[in-house]
Amino acid sequence: MTPLKSVLLATSAGLLVSASAAAQQSLLLIPDSGADRISAFDPATGALVNLNFIPKDGRMKQVIQVVQTPWNTLLMTDFEANSIWEYGLDGQYIQTFVDTAQIGFPTAPGASRGLQGICIAYGKVWFTVNDVIGTGADNRNAIWSVNYDGTGLQQFVSAVDQPALGQVRGLAPLNGGFVVADSGDSGDDDIEFVSAAGVVETPCWHDGTDDVSYMRFPQQVTVTDEGSVLVATFTTATVFELDGATGNLVNFVIPTPGLSMRGVYPLENGEWLSSGGTKVLRVAPIGGTTTDIVNITLGTYGVNGSFRWISKIQIGQCFGDLDLSGEVDLGDIAFALLDYGLCPGCPSDLDGTGDVNFGDIALILLSAGPCS
Image (cartoon, helix red, strand yellow):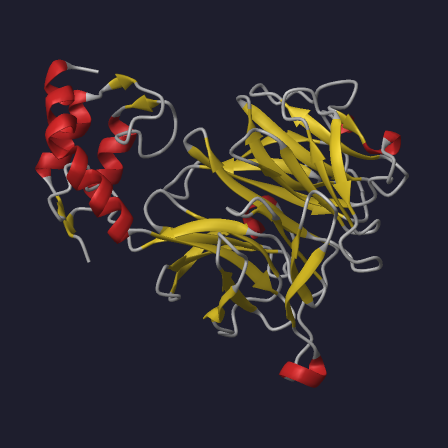
């Protein structure tokens, strides 16, 4: 850190704390594909905040996961529409960020292959494409990447080149690569590790057949702030906790026997929020007790819920306002230039690559203007 940067941080430390606390609010977003909407929950307790955070709009067909972009919009994978939609934090549709017609996928309702997991890491958007038939075409059962501006769509790794990849679903960045849920239909349900070079680690990172409670049909994988990996499994209705360094089993809980688990995310109170079927529930890792948050049934709500995967977003923050002036302008560019170069964890590293470079400057320019 440069001496000038140290002075800037020292003189604005109190403002930084107060502004951050006042400006930011976290939410956990869960798609409900039974009602084709996005619901919001409290990240501390799991309490329902807004069942219709993004209400049904006729476009969403079977949204699996929603993530927040570095430029403060939302990207959502839609399995049935085979597209990645981009929405604003106000819930308004912006554009089709990725149309998988570009990679030869059908978009007919009920198609057997489509988009599943999505994450933003290493300066790109990454998503998985799953083929439940498993025909082996090179654009099925694969991880793809795309640049922040929607260009540069390319396949990162597929089950054709790396058969151990299996039938991919959830993915999350870990140790420079990714942990990936392999929901194979032949008794081969594992968590794979894919390196930055697109190579699947062998033997598999975590062999689900070795678990006390057999890992069958893993869906979402989530890396916690402490470095452990949480896995929600559909068929065995279990939430697993794995050691992020070794892949070894640490803990498992069966929240509600018979309720298929799809999503899992750590709550700030030390419990886990889990989603599946009509329910979103809170799970105690120790003791395994559960508390229903919502149960969206036809009799109560007029529709049967179908909750998917869980992601955290921040709202009310002013992205790119590095000098806390209330506006994104040349002052923020100057602030970023002080960090230019290798700088992991710096506020100026807006795209999370570990370097402050032209990509971060470009994001500041895209966000230019007064904070709302």
